[in-house]
Amino acid sequence: MRPFRLELAEGVSRQQFNGNKLRLASLERPPFVIFERSNGTVTGFKGYCYEILHALQKIYNFTYEVKEPSDNTYGTITANGSWNGMIGMIIEHIVDIGVGPFSVTHSRSKAIDFSVAFHEEPTAILIPPPAEDNRLLACIKPFRLEVWLSLLLFALLLPIVLWKDLTFVWKTYQKAAVTHSQISPVKPNVFQERSPALAKQYFFILGVLIGQCIASFVTLRLPFLVRDVKSSLSLYDDLAGQKLSSIGFSPRLLGAFWCLSAVVFASAYVGILVGFLSFPRLSPIIGKLEELPGSKLGWGVHRGTALETLFTEATTGVYKTIGEGLLKQQGALVDANADGVQRVTNGSYAFIKEKSYLQFAVGEDYARSGTCRLSIAKQEFFKVNFAFALPTDSPLKHLLDKKILQLIETGLGEYWKKLYWPPSSRKCDDVNRSGGAIKSLNLTDLQGAFVILALGSGAASAIFVAERIITQSLISRFLTFKSVF
Image 1 (tube, rainbow, N blue to C red):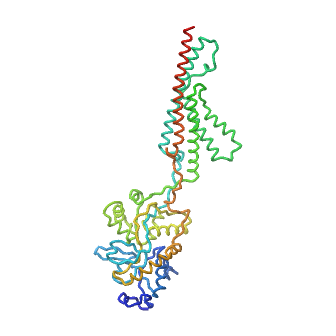
Image 2: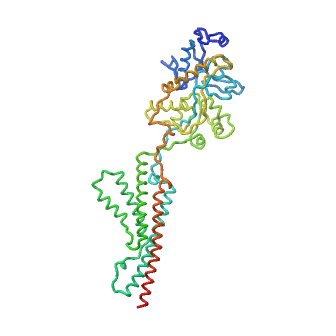
Image 3: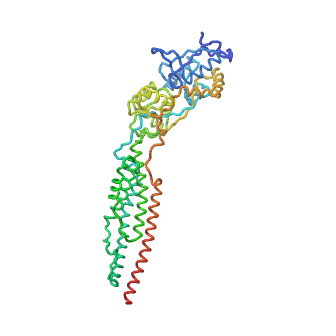
């Protein structure tokens, strides 16, 4: 089999190459290019890209040989303006086609040609697995800060309002009782009421909240303690048994609305707390590229790829910051993808790579170790098209473009993805799919309880004013009646 020479291409039938041998350049890059090995020796090639190539092989009748670049890179511009890696091999006509997921970039397109794109791929960040939230302060996590502050404000002010209201009512009733005693020797029971104490009102407000929480916890978390219902209710009575004075309708109405709101607050608090403790929330170390420079992670990319060029040649923004870190950090440019993955496994490191490879690495590591030691940050960036690389003005380009488009349009591309893309793992799923995590409640979530409390406060205030007016009117009548007789 003689090698296929470009200068012979025009004379070769477009339906077949008559057994000519194509010279290919490839680097292993699952799931697009996978080297089959036996006892350490490469015996075959498979993957998404080679499925395309094997389909073309059946159409055009050619054979091929694969050469790996000595520097193990796809290719970047060197200091003297030349290209290294597989792109350098293509420019120098050492190979006819670069088979693999070559990123189509402006700088590369000025040096070589590309076939029609067969896949679009975003870039992602491989990071250590999410850390479980610290449970030391789990008791305050069900509510956000604004909710706690609002509850604290109500817990501080409501007892004072109740105390002031009860004090006024008590004094009014006492004054009425004194006036009544002057005209009647009989003392009604209301005269036996003691002067309201502020501490008692605080016990009432806090006791209702704590009692409701305990009752909710027994209901939600310990349903099997049916035999202890009586003791639970007794405990509730001890905590929330601080009763309001029996005089005055407005303070009792305000207390009733507080009890109703406390049911909502307590049920929400206990429900979220149980969720936090039963299903701990996992917090990713970073969620997007902009957070990487401020984290404690080092980072790296595969040497000689489009990502290296993207970051190191950037002049502004976060890309420039990442590029400066690549140049400053020793060993940030790894020579093999497996090295980058291993550094992430060791901890305190982030590996930036196309998402399909990172998904493959996560699945492979879980299959090997049985634990989730890797995860993928939520944000994707730098979407790029993948294509085969060809020498400039290669006569093979037209043949490849036409058949690749036909293969993709028939749905074979999706079929090949199912063959080689790793199946989604529920245990080691991407961080960006963890949207069902239990969240802390904010004011919007609890607005119903606050509305109930506000309505109760408004109604109690209105009744308080009405009571004051009516009581003063009655006292005036008593005094008028006394003066007449």
